[in-house]
Image (tube, each protein chain N blue to C red):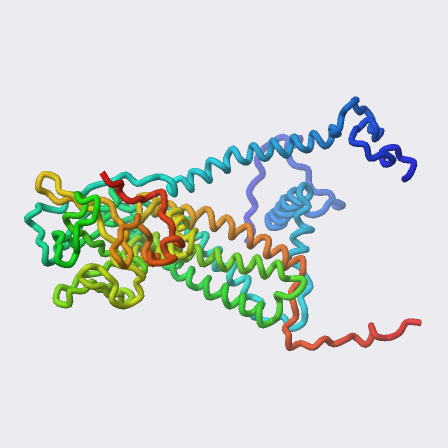
Length: 266
Length: 227
């Protein structure tokens, strides 16, 4: 049953004019919202021409036989994004001072709401990322996807592997428990055994002749600013080259020449 | 374009090359000059923040650590036959992480030989617990008269000389001195297999033969000068 409210007694000039038959029916709220979204996207696109780049990146042609192995690179990138996001939130509670670091890490695990979960995601995520990065590398190697013209992308990938391991090494110290401390001592002493430059490299990483007051903050800065910045930049270059050069077909796929293309055209 | 006057001559003067608006005696075009100026200005601006930042990060490599002496007990607390472990702060201001253990005894001419010069720093032998393989803490086992490392099985005799496992040189030592009847422990020094003193090196760095040249002394830590 439809209720009709009585019209308020307002003068005729102020009443809205009824819709004329040739006008389109009024739009519902969903259509209005859709149109607002399209208008906003159009506004940005008109000023940036981003849609062309997005189409170039997203709607590429992929070879026949593309399979689940080709998702390992994206999986690695999502592992990195997980590390980046959880890392940012861990940094809100973490204190990189030698007397406070362990206590702040303990606070994250035992007291902060969901702290245990976020720290766990970061800790296990780092292992997942290392595993995925090597699986991705193995896929590239066994599929021969490093060959011309993709050698530069292989080189960038190798730098990314090294940077991932640098992240693992510097992040290992940050909980500042016995395991972190001694693992770092051992790692820095391994650095020191490099002839000629080794001792100076270890001095640089430790910010002095031994584990000192600023070693932890130095590792923290490398772990959360220096290396992540480099990783983000190199992932950008890596993805650009993937989109630019395209992906390779798996090696077991034989090329099937199209008979139409082999026909001689008189 | 053989008729283009700018191509006809290889003269270094812009006037000879027929460039419009050239001055007499001018060799660098104004376009090249402006390009060079812009690049130089960019390089100066970039170095203005890059060089100080680099120096800031590399500074600790060249800063000499101050010489610190830590009290570890009265002279009567130590004897010439067995080690007494003492915990003291090697790096100040970082709490427990800056502490280290040394095994200390009186100098014993029977197996230590004559006191090394400078003599005021050698009356007591203080052996560092930092393993010379990769820096784990060693422990003295009195029954076996051995220092034993739990990490990778490094074994040293009672003088700190390597007798087994992966370490490459004897255990580091600390300078000691006596002030008002108290024993004080000072900076660390490294020794080679003949117990000759060297400035402190990282564990894993050999000091015999070519090792002492492969792993040079660092500006942060030097030997104490003879007084």
